[in-house]
Image 1 (cartoon, rainbow, N blue to C red):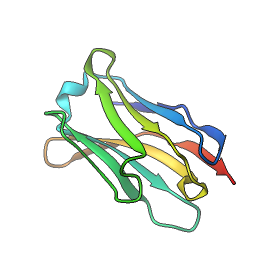
Image 2 (cartoon, one colour):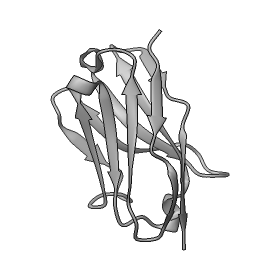
Image 3 (tube, one colour):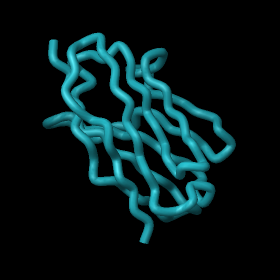
Length: 116
């Protein structure tokens, strides 16, 4: 069973930075895509950023220019560098990995709180 473990969340002031990590229990070459999602209290989970097997990326409009998604295949880890954080970025951040057409794996989430 594949496991994904997020880390790096915390409390930061507006304008600050955090780097989230998502460590996989398997070689991440097996995933066609890996994503970061977030869910704020009372809101639906939303896609923040995704990275494909070929290294291409895309981002939600709300984080473009501030967040950077990346992956280190040697470490089986995906990252989300978050800069210029805003209070509206406060949420639980989840990583997701897609294998084939129908298989999704989720991490347990890490809390990010941005104070104003």
